[in-house]
Image 1 (tube, rainbow, N blue to C red):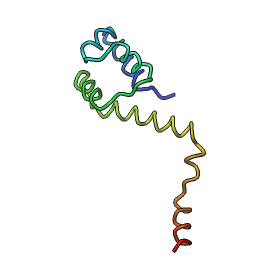
Image 2 (image 1 turned 60 degrees about the vertical axis):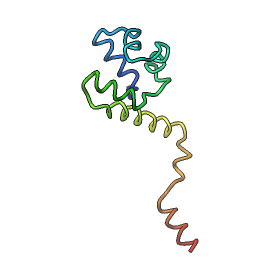
Image 3 (image 1 turned 90 degrees about the vertical axis):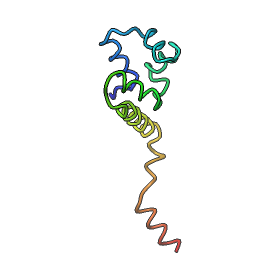
Image 4 (image 1 turned 60 degrees about the horizontal axis):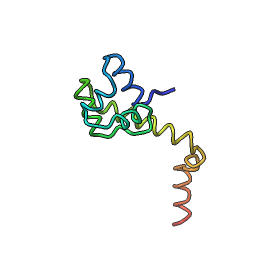
Length: 99
Protein backbone atom coordinates (compact mmCIF):
# COMPACT_ATOMS: atom_id res chain seq x y z
CA UNK A 1 0.00 0.00 0.00
CA UNK A 2 1.02 3.62 -0.51
CA UNK A 3 2.88 5.34 2.28
CA UNK A 4 1.11 8.41 3.56
CA UNK A 5 2.99 11.69 3.78
CA UNK A 6 2.78 11.32 7.55
CA UNK A 7 4.37 7.86 7.53
CA UNK A 8 7.09 9.21 5.28
CA UNK A 9 7.75 12.07 7.72
CA UNK A 10 7.75 9.66 10.66
CA UNK A 11 10.41 7.59 8.91
CA UNK A 12 12.59 10.67 8.26
CA UNK A 13 12.35 11.77 11.92
CA UNK A 14 13.19 8.26 13.10
CA UNK A 15 16.15 7.98 10.72
CA UNK A 16 17.52 11.36 11.81
CA UNK A 17 16.76 10.55 15.47
CA UNK A 18 14.67 13.70 15.90
CA UNK A 19 12.15 13.57 18.73
CA UNK A 20 8.59 14.34 17.68
CA UNK A 21 8.07 16.87 20.48
CA UNK A 22 11.27 18.70 19.58
CA UNK A 23 10.33 18.69 15.88
CA UNK A 24 6.83 20.04 16.56
CA UNK A 25 8.25 22.87 18.67
CA UNK A 26 10.88 23.70 16.08
CA UNK A 27 8.38 24.05 13.23
CA UNK A 28 5.84 25.81 15.46
CA UNK A 29 2.98 23.33 15.68
CA UNK A 30 1.41 21.57 18.66
CA UNK A 31 2.76 18.07 19.35
CA UNK A 32 -0.84 16.80 19.17
CA UNK A 33 -1.17 18.25 15.66
CA UNK A 34 2.12 16.65 14.62
CA UNK A 35 0.83 13.35 15.96
CA UNK A 36 -2.33 13.67 13.82
CA UNK A 37 -0.17 14.55 10.84
CA UNK A 38 2.02 11.46 11.33
CA UNK A 39 -1.09 9.25 11.59
CA UNK A 40 -2.50 10.73 8.40
CA UNK A 41 -5.45 12.32 10.22
CA UNK A 42 -4.28 15.77 9.21
CA UNK A 43 -3.07 17.04 5.86
CA UNK A 44 0.30 18.54 5.14
CA UNK A 45 -0.45 22.02 3.83
CA UNK A 46 1.69 24.02 1.41
CA UNK A 47 3.31 25.94 4.28
CA UNK A 48 4.50 22.72 5.93
CA UNK A 49 5.57 21.26 2.58
CA UNK A 50 7.85 24.28 2.10
CA UNK A 51 9.23 23.95 5.64
CA UNK A 52 9.91 20.21 5.21
CA UNK A 53 11.46 20.80 1.82
CA UNK A 54 13.83 23.40 3.23
CA UNK A 55 14.63 21.33 6.33
CA UNK A 56 15.28 18.03 4.57
CA UNK A 57 16.69 19.55 1.39
CA UNK A 58 14.26 18.22 -1.17
CA UNK A 59 11.48 19.44 -3.43
CA UNK A 60 8.44 20.58 -1.37
CA UNK A 61 6.25 19.30 -4.21
CA UNK A 62 7.13 15.78 -3.07
CA UNK A 63 4.90 16.16 0.01
CA UNK A 64 2.02 17.58 -2.00
CA UNK A 65 2.30 14.79 -4.59
CA UNK A 66 2.35 11.99 -2.01
CA UNK A 67 -0.68 13.47 -0.37
CA UNK A 68 -2.61 14.16 -3.57
CA UNK A 69 -1.93 10.66 -4.87
CA UNK A 70 -3.17 9.07 -1.65
CA UNK A 71 -6.25 11.28 -1.49
CA UNK A 72 -7.22 10.58 -5.11
CA UNK A 73 -6.73 6.87 -4.56
CA UNK A 74 -8.80 6.95 -1.35
CA UNK A 75 -11.67 8.79 -3.05
CA UNK A 76 -11.66 6.49 -6.04
CA UNK A 77 -11.85 3.39 -3.84
CA UNK A 78 -14.45 4.88 -1.52
CA UNK A 79 -16.79 6.09 -4.25
CA UNK A 80 -15.99 4.04 -7.34
CA UNK A 81 -19.60 4.05 -8.57
CA UNK A 82 -19.82 7.81 -8.41
CA UNK A 83 -16.90 8.24 -10.83
CA UNK A 84 -17.61 5.30 -13.13
CA UNK A 85 -20.68 7.04 -14.59
CA UNK A 86 -18.60 9.77 -16.26
CA UNK A 87 -17.78 9.15 -19.91
CA UNK A 88 -16.70 11.50 -22.67
CA UNK A 89 -18.66 9.41 -25.18
CA UNK A 90 -21.82 9.95 -23.16
CA UNK A 91 -21.11 13.65 -22.88
CA UNK A 92 -20.51 14.03 -26.60
CA UNK A 93 -23.46 11.76 -27.44
CA UNK A 94 -25.78 13.67 -25.11
CA UNK A 95 -24.55 16.97 -26.48
CA UNK A 96 -25.42 15.96 -30.06
CA UNK A 97 -28.88 14.88 -28.98
CA UNK A 98 -29.44 18.16 -27.17
CA UNK A 99 -28.65 20.28 -30.22
